[in-house]
Length: 272
Image 1: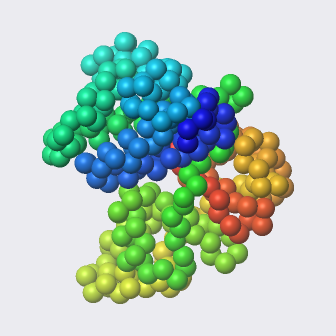
Image 2 (image 1 turned 180 degrees about the vertical axis):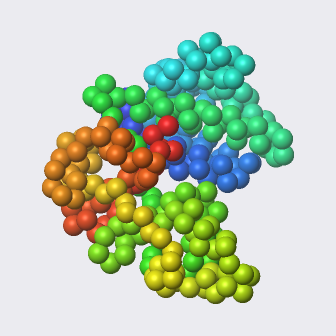
């Protein structure tokens, strides 16, 4: 990606999503630093306009990170709780050149890169024109299907630490919560639990599994850059800030114009 120069809104959205995905992969593997590191290196190459080393990318990446108060300001006020981005960058640079990328070294490198990714994500969310849904929403969405067995849905929730899974019940979007699944499987005998795990979501729904209404908005004309293009399913425009207030902890489901294809998901976790 050499020759990119400064990050415009399109490039910023691209790297923001790349960092999120890489960070989530690293959280599943305490030694899985590679993906986050590679995204940061590609970002450095884009900012510098040429392929070089982490050392050469340093000034550009630190300049970008400085847009977030987590980079330097907050660590100055709370040094016991936060490490400055510049220090993290030096630690990562040193570990990157270390021949030993296993065990404690790899785990510490992964931790430092995850924290760096969080700071860079926060920096790229800082937008002089206000929050944009495309800067926040998750695009690679895991959904449940009415024909999926409860056993599989439960497993997906545990593997990915999901609180909600969206699903389309044939007419509208719903969300299935971990609380609903736990309640459905907990207060019953072992034999009954096995039967319920084998059931499809559709069968379980008929047997008492509760599905919650999703907070659904749709994109108009395929655009996802400004909140003016977010339309409630009843046809009224809606501001992103209003959506956050309305969500009350539920995920916000962003659909295409036909309201059947899910193109994005926003949870409180994504708004932190």
